[in-house]
Length: 624
Image (cartoon, rainbow, N blue to C red; front, top):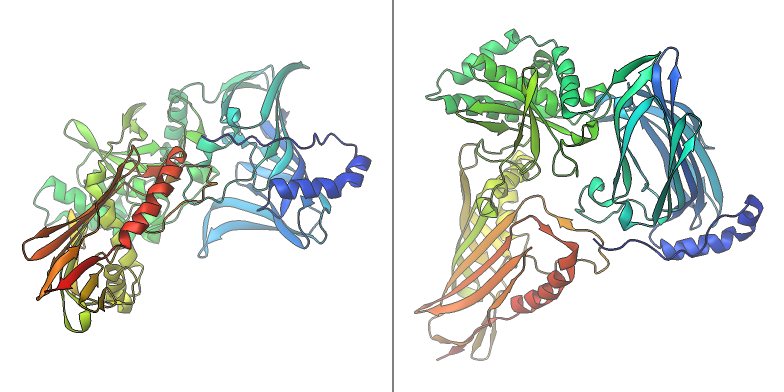
């Protein structure tokens, strides 16, 4: 990972009067340091203490004090704090009117999550604005992590954590060594005080497709093992056993009633010829008929909704969908189990007993001597496939009072293969004419089916034609045929007639022909300043084969040189060859791990410039 430590241009340990005198020079230096930001935080303090409340028991109190400075004129930004049923905002001072709303999308409330926020307007460059707020956690399980990185860059940030002697808390550090951050530990009054201080910290990145925040930003993960409350010792998460025990206690309170599902299950399985067909019928029905809504935070972030409510409403989060599918499979006579997990976006595993480890739930189906993992939130995915975001991830499978730890299998990039096949000849008015077929499997198939689904039905053919033409207005697609656009098919295909205008130029007795209409990854250079790995949605394996009938009365005069490059992140090959009366063009690209590491960004950019040159080289034919 690239070093993100910036030179420290000021210490910022000024009195308020000195700060007022120097705020223009500080703002100027800060705008040079953070040229893409309109506002920065001069100084930020986060103080975390644990107290015993008579009515609430042991609580965590987090106070946020921030001092903002405008790096431009006429700056507008938002000061926000989220809370839920397990926490509350007890103080919120922003210096501007505040709104307090449930978090929702499309009119559907995601859970008990609320957000309180203010719009802050700073009129002048170097104007300073102060805010503070206090958040209380009533259930200490929900205090999972605290980040030194925030939505705005910060010149000086301090996190102070006071751990009473009657508590056992592990503070796990992530990514601190990559930043200008120091830490110290000191004894307090019947407590231990941990302080983390950082300077010149960038804001969260806006880089496209960067790894999850837990991989790249400095933060502290709380593992609260136990504490004393009213003189009694209470255990939270001292081990994975404790974590699973708490999850199980939530599941016990769901209140499932399978009876409303029974007729639907009987209908779905009535004509199935095998157990696998029964499972497929249920799995695909949940995919197609239950709308996925992501719930987050609060008790709803970990407690599944009962199956009858999800079935009735026809929408639910990952937990609700997993629970519904489990109950339907049980009705059909299968051993199905709820399964907790963290997706690829999280840097943790079950060696750390914390709610931060989990952000997803699926259903595990006992199948012979192993499990099949069913994630109904992934639209159109085949029952034999797993999405990239869950491949290789640890899962916690319910097993009565115990649990089973497993890992979801990893699929090769070859499973996501997409092939383009074109047969062409030079027709009237020097247009390339012929046919095209695209075959796709795995997540390449899933993503295309999603693309088609979310296209208006009366524009479906237009959308497919646009896909086959790669959005090129000089390409016309007709006579479209599709196959395999269903869950069960492991491979789908699209085919049609193709007419390509302006791909052939005639100069005197020579024809200049460009065969590749797709030019995969053309002009796809990264910014050379990129700081983080580039993560793709799935592993890539794409091939293009174009066969061109040599125009009558012409012979091949010039053929582009082949191109090839390979490293651990990506592999490209492109070449032409003459085969009797035809020219065959073959191109392939493989990105086997669905990422380009930051260490290979320069290699990618260097090769991409050569790739662009390769695409610009035509076949040249001479008239006989």
